[in-house]
Image (cartoon, rainbow, N blue to C red; front, side, top):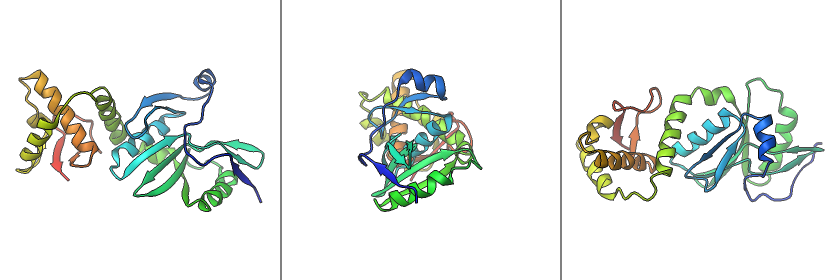
Length: 215
């Protein structure tokens, strides 16, 4: 039997040498909304996965690189922890067909005793959703740089308009007024992030033709 140990199961992003990570991994740094610090991911698939968690209104928070475990004599840091509808999850991303069962099985049993669901998902399954994830990376970056902008009036106006039927982003924006256009665009993204409106983002890049409708 392989023993799994952890000093703490309070999820927090594990510290790494920035220079070492930049040299040894496909490293990305990104600010998100459901994680209050700069997230450091070790692959493009990991970054896209966090974007998908941002897009899921039922996910309340996530932490990349959340725990430092010992699996037998080996040190192991899972890729991501998140909470969804009051339940806790830990996921590991691996290329399809990777031989990881010797780590995954004892870790899954360990987390099961802590009421945490553990699973290994393939990079390829994340890449299949890359258009959707990249659209949400753009939305998250826009919202992160617009936190001080008050869009309450624009949000109310947009909700009233959408009660009459779906709109495209181009139809919803006042293209003749740059300031109002910016505020209404941010309002659309805030409403989408909160799950009040739905944007058609799964198959095409975000554009003026993207449809908006009430959830």
